[in-house]
Every structure is written in C-alpha cells, then in structure tokens.
Amino acid sequence: AKEQNVPENYKASYSADKLTVTNTYVKPADKDNKGSKKIEKVKTGDSLDLKLYGGIGIFAVLIMILLFVVEARRKKKRVIK
Image (cartoon, rainbow, N blue to C red):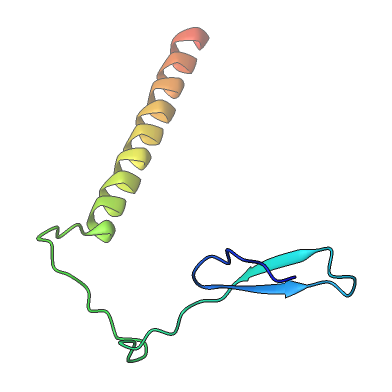
C-alpha cells in the first residue's frame, strides 16, 4: 500500500515490512536562483563613528579616575593634619 496523501514537496519512503511510512521534505528547485549576489551596504544616513565615541568614553573614564585619585589624596592630607 502506498501513502495516499503525500504533501507537496515531500517524498514518501517505506520500511522493509511496509508498516512504517516516512515523509521526507524535498526542497523544490528554484528556477530563478542565479547564484549568490553581492549585497551592497545600504547607506541609511547614520554616520556613527565608533572611534570618536569610544575615544570620548575612554577620556571621560580617565578624567573620573584622575578626579577620584586627587580627592583621595586631599582626604589623606586632611586626616594627617
């Protein structure tokens, strides 16, 4: 006996004892596929410059560390007096 309702793009296969039917998906051939195309980067108007913002962020962190060290030294001098 054969499977009566095999869905589109599926292939029916049967076990040796004909008790188990397995439907396997078969990818349809794409007739319009011309191979891989090179995708160009789309210009969205977003001119995010990571180097600029990264540099500003690192500079801000260094300033914060410097201020922390200066304040710690001031407190240390006050305690000694």
